[in-house]
Length: 464
Image (cartoon, rainbow, N blue to C red; front, side, top):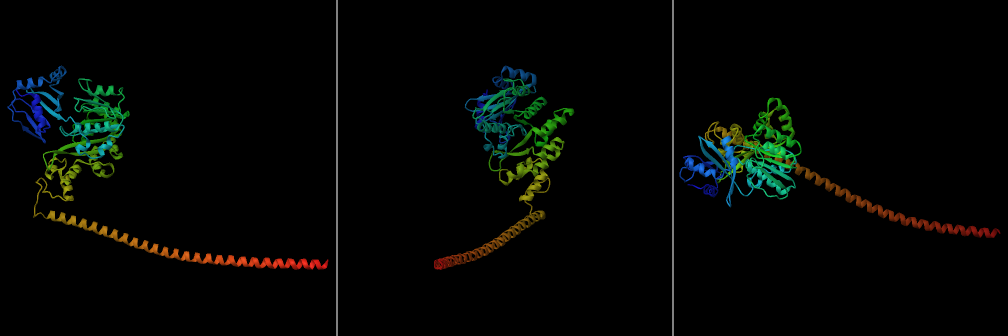
């Protein structure tokens, strides 16, 4: 019989992200997003049950009986940690194991936009990481927690089902609680969190209305709350939260969400162009004043357009804009982007406007030498280039003219300054001459006065 630990070691050695175990099939590994069978023999139902029973505790078995599925954390020493979902299918056991790296990823490892680092400096509000299963939501949350742990002296509380990455205190103090082992539900853990003095709360997933409600309340009361949703866009995430509440509460929840929401990041893992790895395309929605107003007024359908216009100032971007950046940087192919795009026509038009050629709507992208529209596109690009060149030349000529004018003004100023110095020299010489003449005049009149006094004294003596 195949040993589970051996399968998991093989999974890690092949760099697979997931292991699928199901009856009458060989174990399956997901490599770069593609499910591939292993070389092992098909597994019988009783063999699978015996293999999986070894990692189930009593509480796991109870939950499996009650809900027909249970999440379990499992470790192979020196290899990796794994998150397993064990379930019942057609009366027999099945399981999927997701590999969790021992080394907690960094945002730099993921190659995510730098604006996400800014989110880790926030002190309150709600941040959501969304996307389909296997898109890297948990890893992104953990990377954000890692950065906070490295840079901020705060108390971080994580609530997970099960615990995935194991953190050690650095600048922060971290408390990790697992559903079923340390607390019965996400909602109960969140309520208890209010009495545990957390600064940052990470909720593994907002699965139900009570958890959403408590998370929003925690965001309002001065906590930074990070969580995930299984949604494919910012607008879909907001709709998902709204739909979880009865219509009588939705207006109030919209107002709350418009005030506490900080950001929604949506991830989509795409195969790389150059190798067998994958890279994330990331949609980023931030709660700008305009977005906040749209949420409060239930204008959710307008959010995508606002994101597309808010790239420079708020660093938002749509999924298509992220894919365009990946195409331009040669990370993914045009075909990959088109296949994964939520709006292919928009993406096709955007790529045409830049420098890529695309086939007709609904066709494959590729060359077509008889398509004059491509010549038109090249001519339009050339026209825009010429306009930019002319504008640049005009600006350069204008600046050179102004430089010459300034040089002339400086030259005139230098001449005027030289003339002023010459005039000052003349005035100083005249001043010296006047001073000399003044001294001569003073001496002349002093002698004359002395003579007059002498004559007056002589006459006065004669009269006596």
